[in-house]
Length: 292
Image 1 (cartoon, rainbow, N blue to C red):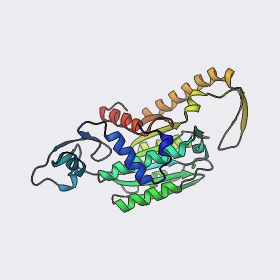
Image 2: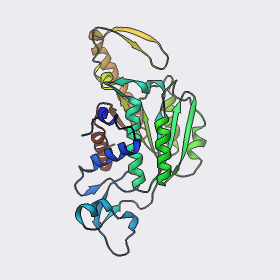
Image 3: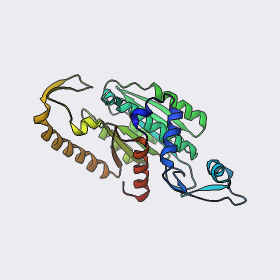
Image 4: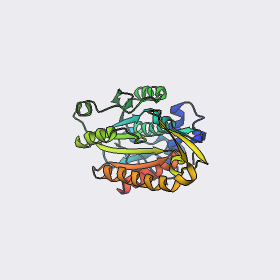
């Protein structure tokens, strides 16, 4: 298992992505997470005439035999990563900020998608602005995505609803949209974005990031809590507030999950303390089984 705190010591996102992908692929016993759109495929022996692009050189190095990655779908797709870079993504738990976990998650999935020949794209939502890097399948483009991802520094609030429909429908092509966010919104702007994307019939996966300290509310005594986007503060007695907080949090998470699943949007809440390879393995296995 790859501890997120350990991974943050790897400053090169490409090296980090390779480390994470190698880590969770090792658990799949002669199958691999290949094939367009982050789907599974199986190995089979090479036959004359097979497309050499699907030859797995790693398996050849291990077994001295040629294997082809047999994909469930033959057409590559575009995988677009949407990153929430509002100030609340700076929330830190035990040295791991949500934005750091988000970058590691995006880098790992982008590396995996690129291995499959899928085009990758990046959008960053921050403080009224929307950064957009269009999709391309070549390795140089992946390096550009990593570069822009490394430059992301959270601040301000989530971008208010813009011309999302025109932006995400402009290429007349369905995409796999992977949205990484903490779901912190002042007035439903994240739901507004997701409603628009769902109406365009894209496949959408939401990774909802939370610090373990947010989930456990493991603060002591009187604590001052600050809204990282508005600067507002409140003092609470952590011990007496914990029970009510956890009840309210459960209700909040249930509402989010029901809202998204009702629009056929896949939802996965992740703690930033969760090993990244474990989180990806769990998600991809469940996605294969159609559970989310």
